[in-house]
Image (cartoon, rainbow, N blue to C red):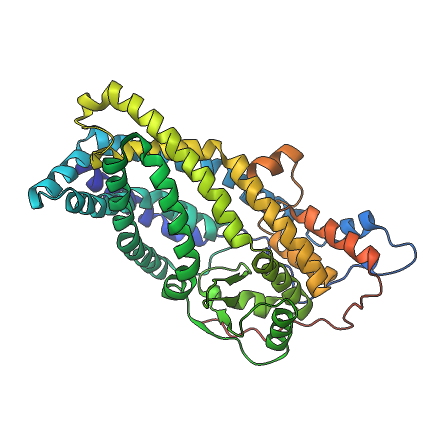
Length: 451
């Protein structure tokens, strides 16, 4: 496995560079804790939506905004480099014969096609983990520290990567085995079966991921008693969300980002907030964020997005089917690949799949962005916290470009921009100026001492 050995050499080089990762920018990224309502955003007969929006946008210093733009725009290139890196890894596995040798090893172990595929899948997933790790170290560790978004040292970060590998092996190896069973049984219609399998997989991931996978990476516990918990339970009851399972998790051990979600169904529904949201923001912000997240649940975005994304994935499988048959006819014999049912051709199939999905990025982003915009509107009406929503949007804008161009937003944004969110909140507030602004808006909870 010379390809894997090469991956380890590259990995060693990058690990040697890790001390440089902690030299983050000297610009203070985060906004101060608590709610800040600019004078131009306060109610009055002359309230102007655009002036109020600009006043919120001005909460970011030019240095903070430039840092946010650099980080987010760099992500555009990372999407391209990530796919190209994956294509190079696929070419390495095929041209070196590593993929074919993994297939042959499976055949020596068992005469059963399903077991051969399962063995290949385990070996291939391990190889991909090693070969893609250098890029992951740069993207998910080094760069996050470089821009002041990470809090986790390399050792704990790498342990999390190993946990992710364990989950991948347990889940994806059988999925790949089933995929190739469909290819062998359904022939030229395999992509239809695979699309149906993708739908089932996404449904189970939505149900089981929050319960069994996410606790592997963070400590989940019942949300601390107090005003925040009562406000969230009140929002849930008012919007007929059938749960009293409200939890917090320690995302601060990994990142400085704020986040929350309402996930699950059929008895697994759970409301989760990370500790950054609890410790860095005010109660109006938390209520606004949770109103948005509950909007996803009430509007059934989970199932709707699964249906839409399944259609996209099925279309991608069809494209892989057509492109694979052409590629195998042209290069299959030279590479020692025996047809679309040969698991050794998986790197080629994945490369085609990845490139095609990259080309569909504007479509998939637009599908998700529409749902996010609907949840924004729902959250403003449910929580009635326009200033909390605007402030939360500004916090997110410390690492998301605040005001993109129209085409830029269509291609690269899977959420509405910070500008659109603040502007929408101020439009809502203009029609509801009787909504009180909290006289004092401290953070929701005292921040714990960091180790």
